[in-house]
Image (tube, rainbow, N blue to C red):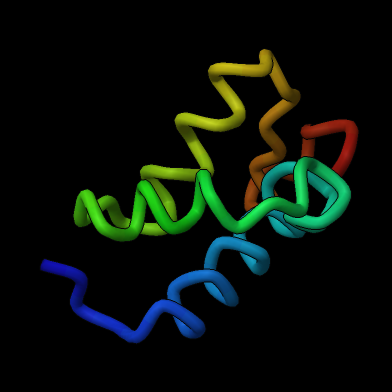
Length: 71
């Protein structure tokens, strides 16, 4: 069962996309269906963003790593 409202969950996904993938959810896909499905399955926002990045082989930025080229 989701622990936060869908709107808050999607806002968190977008924040994580910006932080770790350097683009918005709208830039990546923009569709609600993948978000809704993951939300209803009870996935955490970070789990969803990590899965999406892995699925599409996206570069993951670690903003705490000063050696990361995109930080």
